[in-house]
Amino acid sequence: MERAGGCERRGGSGVSRQELEDRLAKLGRPRVVIVGDLMLDRYVVGEVSRISPEAPIPVLTATRADEKLGGAGNVAFNLHSMEVEASIVGVIGDDGWGRRLRALMEETGLATGGLVVDGDRPTILKTRMVSGVQQMLRVDWEDSREVSGAARAEVLERARALLEGAGALVLSDYGKGVLSADLIAELVAAAQAASIPVLVDPKGDDYGRYRGASVITPNRREAEQALGRKLPDLEAVAEGARDLIEAAGLEVAVITLGAEGIYYRTADGREGREATRARAVFDVTGAGDTVISHLALFLADGFEIDTAVALANQAAGIVVGRLGTNGVTRGELAAKLRESAPEVGKVLGDGDLEELLAAWRSGNRRIVFTNGCFDLLHTGHVNYLRFARSQGDVLIVGVNDDESVARLKGPERPLNTIADRMEVLAAMEMVDAVVAFGDDTPARLVERITPDVLVKGEDWADKGVVGREWVEQHGGQVVLAPLVAGRSTTRLVDRMKGGVEQGKEN
Image 1 (spheres, rainbow, N blue to C red):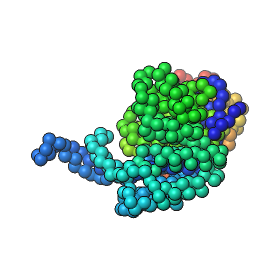
Image 2 (image 1 turned 30 degrees about the vertical axis):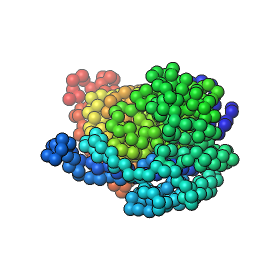
Image 3 (image 1 turned 60 degrees about the vertical axis):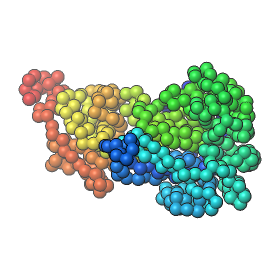
Image 4 (image 1 turned 180 degrees about the vertical axis):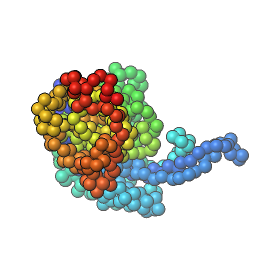
C-alpha cells in the first residue's frame, strides 16, 4: 500500500460504522504540532428584551462572559480533548488578554512553551454578543501585519524543535500575520525532512503558498475564493478539489460543505463524500478547527484518508450542535457512532462494555444496572424493566448464560437460549444494552460496571442484594423495584405443565 506524507491510499469507497468503531477503539496518542494564529474568544451572553432609547438597536442584558481558546488554540484544545499531546506555537501580545490566554492554556492542560510574546502587537481578541443561541455582534481587536524580526525567528525555532518525534504538523492560518509565505515554506520543508504530514487550514486566494503540504481543508466559500469561481454542486466541487491539488502540489484536498457534509479527493483521483452528521446546528464557530484537528490526529496515527474524513465528519457534527468553540472526547465520538447502530447493537460482545460505559460517562449519563435470567418474558418483567430505566438515563441488563441458569433453576432450564433471551431484551425500548455473565451471581459484573443505580426486585429486601456494598462504596445507590403479584417465569412453566390453573396466578 502506498504511503505518502502520512496518508495511505487504497481503492474502494465508504467505511462502515463497525469499521469506524473498531479503528477508533485502537486509536493511539501521537503528538501533533500546531503553528498559527492564536486568539482569545470571548462570549458575552444574555437576553434581549427591549430596544435602546438612544438608538434603534437591541439592548443585551448580559448575564455572563465566557472565554475560550480560539484559532490555533481551538485546534490544540480539540486535540487535547481527544487525549493527545498538542504542541502549539503562536504569538501573543504583552497584555492582559495575552496573559488570560496563557492562563486558559494552563487551566486546560496545554503546554505554553510555544507561546512567543511580541510587545509590538496586541493579543487577538474576538468578542461575540450572544442572545440565546443567536450571535448579535462580533467585535475584533487585532493587528494583521506579518510577524517579523525576533518574534518570527522564535516561532520558527520553537516549531522546528517541537517537530522532532511529532506525528503531524497543522498550519492554522487565519490570515492574522503569523504564517507568512516564507515561514510556511520553511515549516513545510522541516516537516518533510521529519517525514510527517502537513495539514493546512487555509486563508486567502493564493494556495500556492502552501505548496508541498499534504492536506488542505478549506470550506466551500474559501475554496471558491482561491479558485475565483463558484462551486454550486458536487461536480463543481470535485473539479475544484482537483484544481487545488494541482495548484498547490497537494496529496489531498478536503472541502467542508456545511449541510452537505465533507468532500475529499486525493492526488491519484480517489474521492468520496461524507454526509452531514449534525442533528441540529446551533453554532458553526470552530467547526473547521475540529475537522482539521481530527484529521491530523487520525493521519498521524496511520489512518487511511477515507476513515479519517468519516470520523472527522462525525466530530464536526457534534460541535456544531453546541454554542461556541468546543472539543470532542473519544467517548463522545464513540457514542456518536453508536447512534446509528442497529438494534442488535444493544447486545454487547467481549470488549464492547468498557467502550460503551466510557461513552456514557463522558456524556454524564446516569447508568442503571439490573440482572436476571429473563427466560420467558412476561408483564412482570416489562414493568420491572420500565421501573429500572426510570431510575437513570441508560439501562444495562445482565443476563445469566445457559450454564448458570441450569445451575440455579435446574437441568430443564433455560427454555430459551442465551442468544434468544438477549435478542428479545434488546428489542425492548427501555433497555439500552444487554450483556451475558456466567457466574451464579452478578457480583463481578457489578464491579466491572460500577453503576450509579443497582436495581433489584423488592423480594430481595431480606436476601441481601448482591453488589450493594460495592455500589454504595462507589457513591451509587440500590433501589428495590415493586413486583407484579403472581407473575414469574417459574409459575408460567408450572402452568404449562398443568401445575397451576389458568387464571389462578393473580
